[in-house]
Amino acid sequence: MKCPDCGGSEIVKNGSLGNGKPKYKCKSCGRQFVENPQKGPISEETKELIDKLLLERLSLAAIARVTGVSEQWLQTYVNKKYDNIPKK
Image (tube, rainbow, N blue to C red; front, side, top):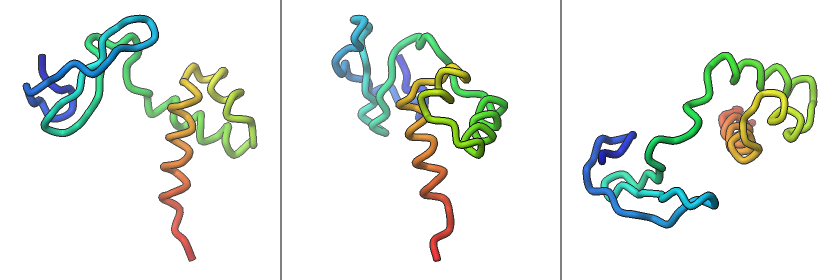
């Protein structure tokens, strides 16, 4: 097994998900991942839709429901966007 981020092969078991699926951690880069994830990366199209819905002031729960992303992923996405706003 190799890390999906850095390609490293020093992988250790790191607990499991609620459904019993094992989690792994890369010793090289620290990335945590599951083997054969159910969902793939969020498309740019979906991110653009999320940006538009955020401007409409919909709740995060509503945006997550409409777009099919998790609320946790959406909160992280919004926080990263906020952190990239230039401060005065």
